[in-house]
Amino acid sequence: MSRPPLVVLGIDPGSVATGYGVVAMHGSALVHVESGVLRTETRKPMGERLDQIFQGLSLVIARAEPREAAIETLYHSRNVVSALKLGQARGVALLASARGGLAVHEYAPSEVKKAVVGHGGAEKAQVQQMVAALLGLRFEGRFDTTDALALAICHLNTAAFRRRQAIAEAASAPPRRTR
Image (cartoon, rainbow, N blue to C red):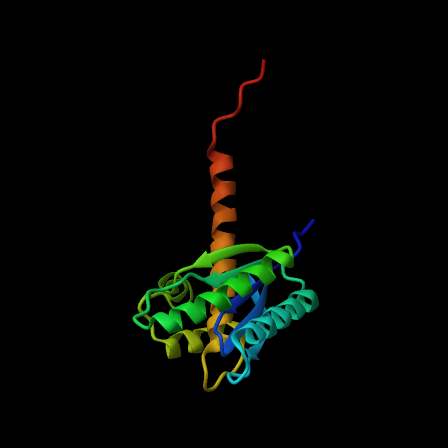
């Protein structure tokens, strides 16, 4: 009896452009389900822009039916206003994921780069190339979509490793005594 594929939504939050990518793992194969960018209108008030992000992610969750979400952790920014806007978009992404019933996992940018490229200091272009190679896709230009797909791939690889580790630990554990 085979286990159903794990489907993960990767989210690269931003107040202007929020990238999303849904990837499934069938056995050991990564399969692209869907991806894109939710763009907001910068002339609109922030509350309306955050609502656009929430509604867009909610539609993706309803359509793709992921079980888990992977979101980048906050990083340090010198621009306080930009960091605040990113934090708001990230909060909306967390809310949409929670409302959609998804288990949420957070990863630092260096963890994602290391999981996808093998080097925590990789450039965005390197991440984009590796995501394209792993999923058999072509990308040009902005990195919002490939960053989101990289988050999903990072989580799928991490989850698969943890499952294998748990199986190995269970197999090597001494038998339980019964009375």
